[in-house]
Image 1 (cartoon, rainbow, N blue to C red):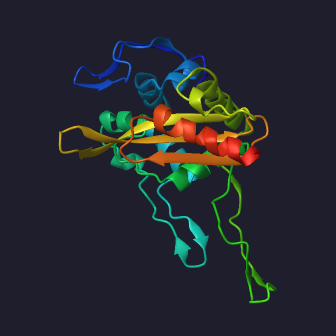
Image 2 (image 1 turned 30 degrees about the vertical axis):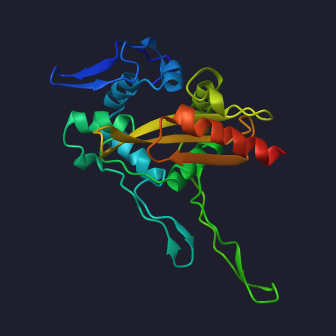
Length: 250
């Protein structure tokens, strides 16, 4: 599907006249292509894109990117798997619509999302994170070299470059402006995820995210910032990304 694919966002996506999925901009964004939709976090656009792409393709890519799978950080030390729904588990189109903007059955950790963004930054090659380089004795002599995860291609170079350009646009002109650093051009994406929990006043608890990497043209670092019960990725997390990135340079 080309990046020029466009829809008109009127503030919601009506699925077969039966259920409606809202956009955070209730008045609508108007005409959206892939770049503007990414920059402005337009849910109706990505719902439309997911329905065109198909649940089989989306779920296969999620699995290729390590979602729903444990990560072995060192011998005997592994993460929880989270949930990447299978295509068969997405019974209705509404299930796919929720998945399209990161809701529904999907459950991913900040580490898993960092690995996803690292694959994009690495021209489409995924390598699971690892914390152990080697085992040494008390003198520092290396006893055993750790077996690092084998890298594997999960998307074409062209697809990874397009995704990088989309993420860069989000920082330049969209919800990720507060993530732009003093020393590097960054690429990344904000997110605000519903938790299904409610506080004592009946307000839904949402979690804030910003995932990104830098330098944009030759990435070396990936950072994911996550805040429980946050106000939004743009407000809570993008500035922290900038602070960390600038600190690395200093």
